Amino acid sequence: MTQFFEKLQKYALLRMIFLVLIGGFMLFRPNEIFHGVVYIVAGYTAFLGLLNLVVAFRNRQEGMSSFGVISGVLLLVAALAILVLAKPIVSIIPIFFGILFVIYGLVKFVKKPARRIVNEPSLPRKIFYLLILLVGILLIFNPFKTVLLVAQIAGAVILLMGIEEGINFFRRN
Picture 1 (cartoon, rainbow, N blue to C red):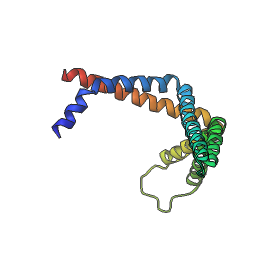
Picture 2: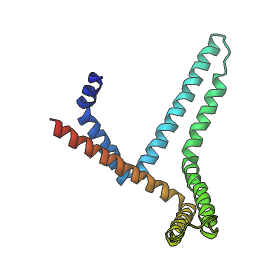
Picture 3: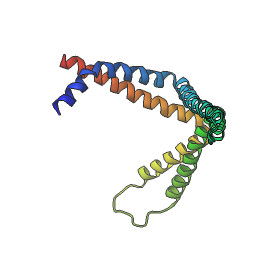
């Protein structure tokens, strides 16, 4: 167990640099991070497709049959679909959450509680449900910007994690 913690401390500076770089890019350049991830996933899928095609043609030359041609072509089509459809697919997710938030906020805002607790103000609860409703509307009408905002928030958290790693590293040394 001691060796595990020694290894963690040994690479703390490297982790700090990695976290600060990734967090900074996600905070200040979320669009580039999104496109980079899309290109990496599409490239990897295309690479697997090409690899399947090469193996299938080698097998065919040796007289063996395989489904490599079909899987290779399907993987190449999937890679193309990832490139073309990544932004619309990612944009659909916030729309679904937005619809759920709008329905939840409206139902809770309009509905009276089954039991009213004595001396409990209902205004804070109504404001909370109204905020949920507004967040839902924001998600519906601006889905891709909200995805980038979430990426920026995650980037800020990762950046803070990296700064904390650095502070702990320099305190120990």
